[in-house]
Image 1: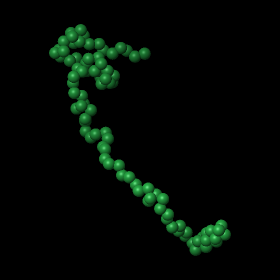
Image 2 (image 1 turned 90 degrees about the horizontal axis):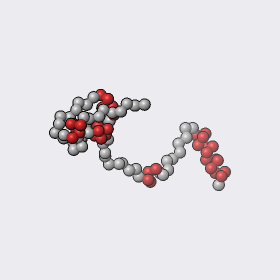
Image 3 (image 1 turned 30 degrees about the vertical axis):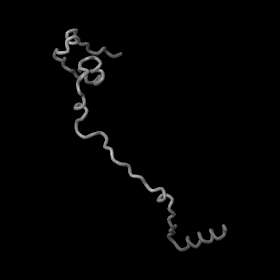
Image 4 (image 1 turned 120 degrees about the vertical axis):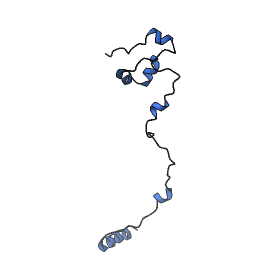
Length: 96
């Protein structure tokens, strides 16, 4: 069973100009939304800089499409030995 989260004092809850309480490691482990919901981080604070450390997690770029006709293009069959080529030709002639 987990412990209840830290509760703000009445002064801190009622006075928006009061100094914010210090954030502990346990508070950070609870997550950013928990800090917002409990009032430790004011609702009108811009959190964008907290999530923009370093490079972006995803980079968007145009998708490269392949030509459908290239996928169905016939490639000539290449057999390593002449014997296999002759055997294949005979098999194909006998089928017709």
